[in-house]
Picture (cartoon, helix red, strand yellow):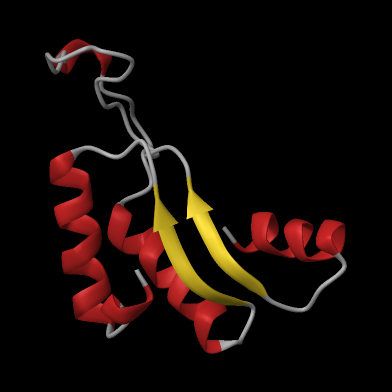
Length: 94
């Protein structure tokens, strides 16, 4: 997350990103019209939502990003993001 943020800051030639958009979950989720979860497609080594939210909180605290956006996330994933951000005290940034 940090390296993606730093690269974006360089490309945009700015010191702050107003909205850091998380486009895809870092785990298997049914997508593109799929409605069934296939357990055999789960991946090893997924980065937990809480860990990603912690990294984003650090960047928020450093003033490098202002808000977090989500897209292509499942209902359960959005609920987990809200829970993680509430626990980290950054729910108002999601």
